[in-house]
Image (cartoon, rainbow, N blue to C red):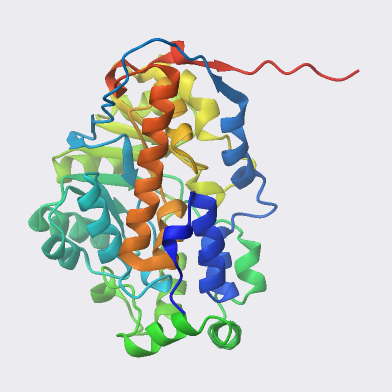
Length: 389
């Protein structure tokens, strides 16, 4: 039976539906984080440290969520973040997400480790698109990817700055990710409990790292090629490299993975157009700082010079409103739309984006703020907690 996403009334409902729709190893890859997953949990919990300071008797009959983010117009302060291998969750993968983002009037971001080629996304979806660059030890790959993005008409380039090595994701290790035979067996057994996912997999072209395919040594073997990519992550990447990539790109250039004020200032110094405060969704360094906790400091330091965006832990429209009130230009989301993708394909992604939009509009009315451009720190306050004893 196809899941009824109309009965999903929040992102967590879509998460539950996604969990029922996917084999356990695949869901855990989507849902899990690094080591004890403390950062992943804190990403969510930190939004509860703030409450609203509403104004009443304001004319909020019409709410305007529109903004400019990363140099392009967006119907709301939300961007679909780059996520890898989206066809694991639904056979349409990145195409479904990009189409839903375009229909919602927001930008879409494609990952280097996408399961749909960057040129195909450019041809199939007309909305604004950004590309997230992973830098390999073979630097010619990164340089060629940049040229391909320029030729395909991408509007901006993220440089992924927090991948000196792959995070220790223990859920994936227990499920056999990285061991081809074991993951095939465990996923196959789990697929018996997810027959719709299995049917989609069996009737569609084999999954592969499509954007990277021309550079990979193992033709058509997604698991072996993923291992190769992980081994190719370059821990020598530095600020001089960032300057070289910015100069080659020549357009909007975003440093993604900022985790301290010092690096935010450095990103501005080397000419970044924007920065994303991010701990990679809690999938890299456990006990990394949360984006929301860093946001006020970073905005104070560089917010008048570049767009500051955040990702991680966003599950409600109220989370987005809190972040914008604290100075974020927009928020990137990954898991929320992937839960929708797994639950219902393009319609599921649209459901996720629609739920967040409706929640944002409702919160804006209830706090008495008519537009995103008018939203600021006056509408939010940190909850003072009194220690026991």
